[in-house]
Image (cartoon, rainbow, N blue to C red; front, top):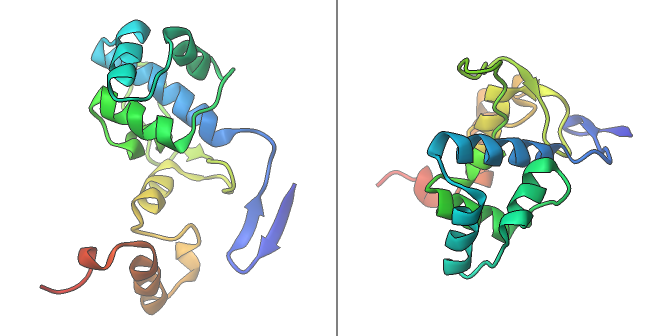
Length: 152
């Protein structure tokens, strides 16, 4: 399903695009960092967010979603930023990710992976190409804490 609004076409699909990105990134990061599901589960328990190793593998396989609280605890346990789990990592095999590759998160239309990353950071709107400089700055100030853009 899709609808058009003030910000362009928005896709509202039943597919769990964000969950799929988090699942793939969790699996990739555990592999790269050499962290077992059991070790991650233990770290999660120590952080006060109990999760079994089978719960972690269920997330990685897409059988289970992740709450926002679990997402931040998983990121802390892995020593990464939550944005690392949310950013689409589009790459073939061991290749570096392609920032121009098309990806999606839930509620977004297909975008370049780099544009999704910049949106997650609050650096650009998903409709950035439609905005003038004033509107871009207004967006940045609307979505970021004042201490990130105020002069000292």
